[in-house]
Length: 427
Ligand SMILES: *Cc1c(COP(=O)(O)O)cnc(C)c1O
Image 1 (cartoon, rainbow, N blue to C red):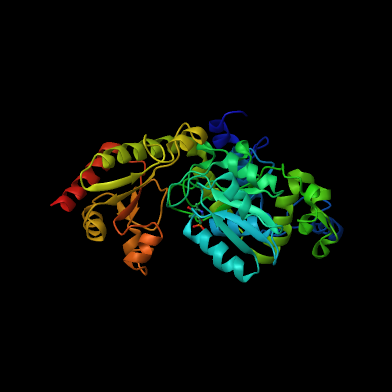
Image 2 (image 1 turned 60 degrees about the vertical axis):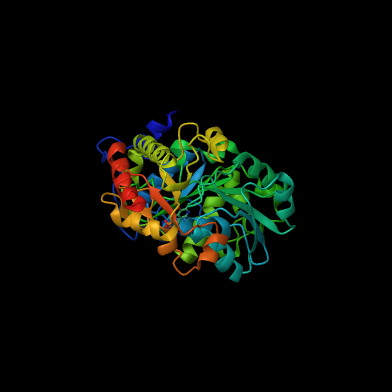
């Protein structure tokens, strides 16, 4: 099964004779066994099978297997949200006293997770610019660094990460690179092919794509040699007393250790499982992901090109727009397109942004991106409302900034809606 298109449709689930054609929703918390010995083997990870949906459920496993196939990984798991995916991916290999290096250009929720919540748990961090030189990247690592983190296309800054260079830096320091690949999806970029070790997703975005189910996923490339860095990863390389003395890296190898530990330890103890019903919705989204992504990208480019020429617009960010700061990196990592999110700054600042948004007829005001329906947001009057003009400027979020997530509507209708709303601004 070679093409990404075929994998979107077919991977992960192959029914046997007379079995359901579509992935069955196994709406059951628990699974039945004839003897305690049978069940004991599952608890000891001696046999594989299901016993409780917090740990594993067949519906989730079919969809996780599809995601592993899409990203080119060896194992994958679903989580209840993108936040849970990033938390688990980091916490699976970091303990109190450890340190991570992260790109400063990442989703706000992930920035808070790393800089506030993980810090409370004793995991410290150093943020680096996505544009940092190799020397600056090297300088961010300390002897207790355990992972490096970044986003392929950052939400909302729309910077593009030089994944190869970040992977090389991580590997020079003997740690894995974790990439949040939410915005381009594996249809447009597969970070594992560029050296990433772990890939995460907020499946809430394009993968679902219809605004119906919050969810997340973690995919392991199966390449990082934990045993070669056993001193750094005791959780994977020494016996787990909470799991019958299993040493994950020995028993499950490079291909399976990370996800098995993440499931049998973190999911067991923290319980951020995706419901089988949500996994089913996610799979419906995945079945058309390869058809939807090109249209989102096409609409994004059309809107970005229109905005760039408009007199009321001060600046436009869209990595695939010729002349964008990140155009070269975008073409290297995502020659077919990145995503449909465009951000732009209005010359008239906050007041202009408010007028513009008020006059939109089709594009809805929402705290969401990557939906089939176009939506937009002015951070200064919504998500970043508590900030002063000075704080907004320091955070690189001008008051007149609008983020628009281009949906699957006709480009000419989208542009017409934006054009009439901009007319109100220009008056
Ligand atoms: C939305 C988002 C998240 C958080 O995902 P949720 O599913 O909302 O928890 C993480 N990373 C990126 C890049 C996102 O866009």
